[in-house]
Image 1 (cartoon, each protein chain N blue to C red):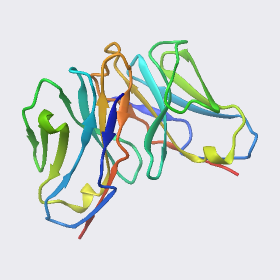
Image 2 (spheres, helix red, strand yellow):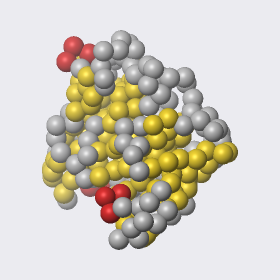
Image 3 (cartoon, rainbow over the protein chains, first blue to last red):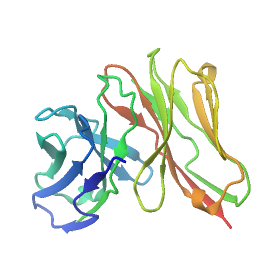
Image 4 (cartoon, rainbow over the protein chains, first blue to last red):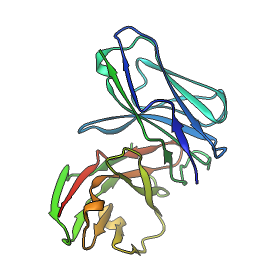
Length: 116
Length: 114
């Protein structure tokens, strides 16, 4: 089975801190994604990556950046954390099928991030 | 632009009742894929089913069934004889060409009471 592992289940940080959320997948998937999940807003895509060192902005990239130095690892970075970034963050990966995402995504357990 | 609407924010049923979760989508593409995911209280989204736009055949898997109708742009999910373990948030998602990503609905929270 595919395993997507997020480094922390719960994280508490302070406003202005630089925050790193790490995600590792073990199935050699090309595609990786970062979402945030907020009540009533569903899943919103922050960034995604279809290859090492490649990244694409999702629907809400402001205030975030990402890094993909190795195929199995996709990091989400909050450059200067703010209280409105308190949320559940979900990482996912999938097999590459070109620009049409035919294969399902495999998700991690999520990181519940609180910014105080 | 793609859009997925799950109009039912929350549904509450009593165990053994049947329940249908609605999913309506919008796309201009002729080739696309639809997905359903389940998110139990533990948090991890789990893939349930995938359908491509050329396959309108309905599917049944145990107590779960899916009804895909292109004419109404709907991909509804029915749970027969619901159980407490079915309590979760359910997401419908749409993938089209040239996007490299999926569009998710806002999710429907299903509570099954004993």
